[in-house]
Amino acid sequence: MGIIENLTVIPRSPQQTALLVSVYALVMLGGGVTYGAEWFRRADTFAVLYRLFGSVSPITTTRTTAGDAQISLRYPWRRCTESVDDRAIIAFIIAMVYTVSFDGFTNTPEFQTLLFGVRDLTGLGPAVSAALYFIGYGGFLGVFWLVAILSHRAGLATDALATAQVLAPTVLPIAAAYEFAHNYPFVVQSLGQLITLSGRAIHLPITVTPLEWLSLPVFWASQVVVIVIGHIFAVVASHILFDEHTTERIGYTQLPLTTLMIAYTMLSLWIISRPIVS
Figure 1 (cartoon, rainbow, N blue to C red):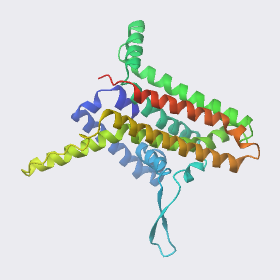
Figure 2 (cartoon, rainbow, N blue to C red):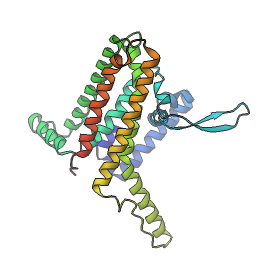
Figure 3 (spheres, rainbow, N blue to C red):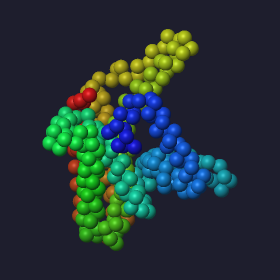
Figure 4 (cartoon, rainbow, N blue to C red):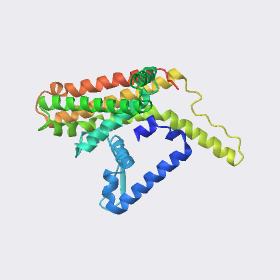
C-alpha cells in the first residue's frame, strides 16, 4: 500500500482507485470465506495495521462476566510492552514506521535531487522510485536488527530474534504519532470539503474550511508536539519492557534502542521541517 500511495499515479485517478479497492475487497472476501477469521488476523493489511495502532490507544473495551462491554482507560504504552509472535509482524511494524517517513521524504527537495540524479545516472526512469523505497526499507530493517543484536548482547531476551520480537511493539507509539501528524491535516481538510459539498447538494450555502486559521508555524509546531509525545511514549514502553525482561542495569541495556529512537526523532523532525516540493 505504501508503494501504491507514494510511487504510482493510482491515488490521483478515481477510476484506478475504485478498481484497486474493488480487487482488494474481492481478495479479502475470498480469503475470509476460505480461511475464516484467521485470514483477517494475518493477511488483511488494514486489519493488521489498525490492530497494531489499537495497541497505542488509551481506550480499551473488555467483556464483563455478564457479557457486557466495558470501556476503560489505560496508559497508551501499556500494550506496547507485549512481544509479537512472528517475524512478519516485526517487518510490518518497521514498514509502518518507514513508509510514512518515506512519504514525507518524497516531498522534500533532497529526495527530488536524489531521485532525478539516480535516474540520470542509471537511465531506469520511474523504476528508480521503487528501488529507493526498498533500499530505504532494507536500511530501516537492518538498523532495527542491529539494535536487537546489541540489546540481546546487553542482556535482553534469549537470542536476537526473541529480542526483536520484544522490541518491535515499543516503536508503535512512534508509528502512530507520525501517522497522525502526517495525515491529520488531510483528514480535517477533506472533512470540511465533504460538509461543503454535501451542503451544496441540498442547496445550502455552506463553506467549511477548518484549517483556514492554521498558520504554517502553528501547523509545524503541532506536528512537532505530536511526534515528540509519540517518542516519549515509546521510550516509556521500552523502559518498562527492559525493567521486566532483564536484571542488568536498565540504562546500559536500553542504550541501543534509546539511541535509535532519538535518531529517528531527529530524522522525523528534519523531514517535516523541509519545504514541500510538488
